Image 1 (cartoon, rainbow, N blue to C red):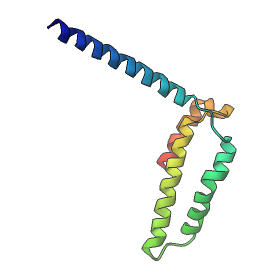
Image 2: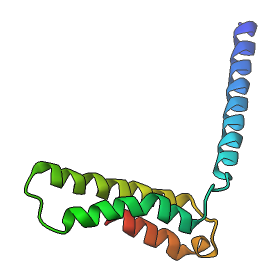
Image 3: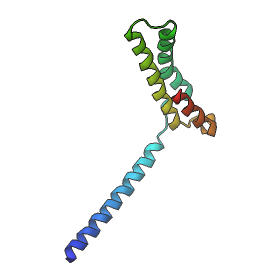
Image 4: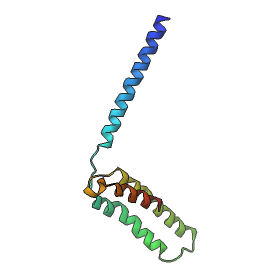
Length: 108
């Protein structure tokens, strides 16, 4: 019975240690610096989707493929907007309005 309690305590402590290590690694992951500025991100990631979307909605699509283009580009823009929630490399990104605008743009 004593061995069972000792093993139980060992596994609990090991689990706590692993959880603490994992939390530390996650905290470090959140501190990763962005590769590009906010402006560059918009230019590289958003503009191609926006250009395709503008072209697709210029006239009402006649075929399913046209609607698929609209659907895919709007989803891609929404997911790209989610990236903005993780960014704080520019001064304006540290404001409460940044999160509100980012969530609103993602929803739209």
